[in-house]
Amino acid sequence: MGGIVPKLAHHAHMRNLPEVVREAIQKAGLGDDLSKIDVVAVTRGPGLAHCLGVGLNAAKTLAAALNKPLIGVHHMEAHALTARLTTADDAQHNSEPYISATGAVNYAPVGSDPYPSFPFLTLLVSGGHTLLLVAHSVDRYTTLATTVDDSIGEAFDKSARELDIPWLPGRAGGPGASLEAYAKGSKSPTRYLDQLPIPMSLRKTKREMKFSFAGLKSAVTRAVEKEKKAGQGIMDEDKKMDLAAGFQHCAITHLCQKVEQGLRDCQEQGIQISSLVISGGVGRNATLRQKMEEVCANYELETQKKTKGSEVDKTKRVRVICPPPKLCTDNAVMIAWTGLERYQKGLIDRYDIDIAPKWPLDMLGSGVVPE
Ligand code: ATP
Ligand code: FE
Image (cartoon, rainbow, N blue to C red; front, side, top):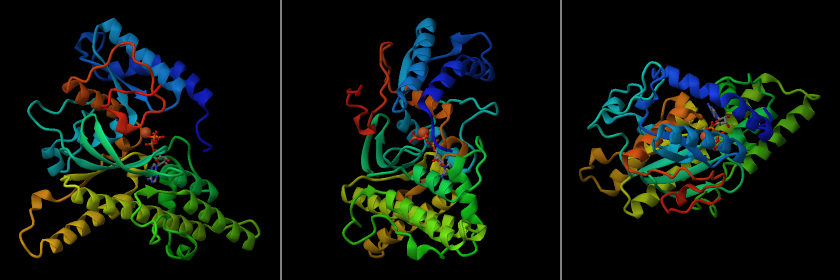
């Protein structure tokens, strides 16, 4: 629960990658016929340099040996584009995205447009990032807001640790998912709200497009300390659930307020947003998904009021789109899908590309990749 140890992660990549590649090829039903592969996609950054290096070298070698194109993918573009695995038709029928029973990605059928269409607003909430972006097209993104301190995933993980919430390593969703389960069990979710701030919601910071989670996280620590002091080192389970619920409420309200602001800003700038895409591990959170539905519904009411009763174009409604939970946390499907989207646009890389451990998403498309 203490995070990733870079050296161990590097060694694990070296040890496991060949077998993982072999298994993926088998599961995709390719057998020994690798000629069916069109293109090799790989994560180029951002992330831990040594781990990226192991993956990139393996992919380069595979692509060169097979004489196939190579595509270096930005990890956060992949989180953002995962939602487009589904077609408009699938989305309407609420079915699973276009993945076969074996887990292999099936190309969206020829002639069908991936859904949602650009431009869309993207809330990327993960272990290392809290980003609100406009996705203009494949390869072009503008950041509206990022965090000034911790990511939301870190805040969930650290709060779960402060609360000693039992976590089974390897369980889907990690400590954040355990905290969500605790919050669900709360009988008095407002108990701690007077001790917990909703970040960046004071008058002077209300309109600022920034996220911040350090203050909220410290408030959780203080509340735990206070309870433990009163309870001779013990905080009872009911109170833990209430504090988990309080933390989750404040963190999600903070996200909602900034998304609301982002929708208004886009409208002011004449950017016609089609959807709000939520992705990244914290996007698995059911309360977050539900609250964002409310944000978009309220936004629609607000827009209706502004048009003073004149007909509102329902096709312009902002829809909330979340990839299925298992595709919100890190997975290889999202890298493969982004590879396909880039391949279709002819965005192919050279075999001598380098890793990009620090790579802001806004720089994509500029042709400049920081070392
Ligand atoms: P990044 O993509 O920024 O490099 P990452 O890939 O490590 O970070 P993800 O795998 O996208 O992050 O997400 C992991 C995070 O999601 C963890 O912090 C985990 O606790 C959090 N998380 C997973 N499920 C939930 C949930 N149901 N509620 C809240 N947080 C969750
Ligand atoms: Fe990730």
